View 1 (spheres, rainbow, N blue to C red):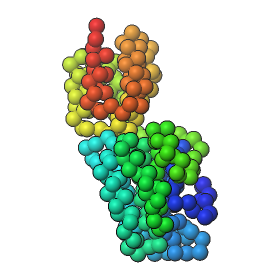
View 2 (view 1 turned 120 degrees about the vertical axis):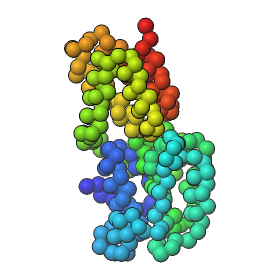
View 3 (view 1 turned 120 degrees about the horizontal axis):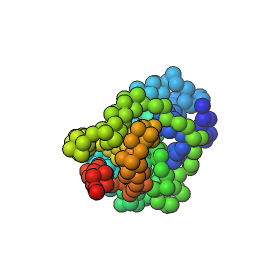
View 4 (view 1 turned 90 degrees about the vertical axis):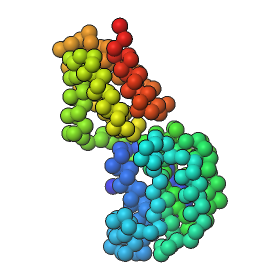
Length: 250
């Protein structure tokens, strides 16, 4: 388990590891900011218990809206305004931004002022799988906590879905494959979830390559280009439409 810094800084950028390990470190840091015990986080005081249960009134989470891919500037402006209101019951107010690399540039610039000149009781935790998407000015105002690389535990449901989609792309008709991609788009998947699914599909196709090498190579090339273009965070509709076009072109 990663040892927590002592004393705590006012802002941390948590990177590396995997989603679970970063979230766990963010939870521990949140509790440490609010802990009422002698060795924070003690885990037993009222503040630690509330932080663990997600019910502490001085902990705030910012993430993309359900129908959006990015954290918008208005969300950060609201966070910034709230930061100047004193805590409800704790010594600190803790603002968790996850995934922080989903902030668009305007949102990141809006965050800068409060990172630089925020009240002493305000603490900021930025969880970012891809910190390179953050502005240098944002990164420089946070202490970096980089976890060692870890492999995410395989998600059986994700792998089963990827296997079904891979089989369809390799052996199904164009109509069947197009319908599957349209149904996937209608689910409005978030960028990270869609990327994880397509990466898993890529792995499944690679394992089946010997069964249908000609079509398999074409599918792999299309999926690989989708993955490379994911750094630009295109919407699900654009990604899946482009994938269909590449798969079905002569």
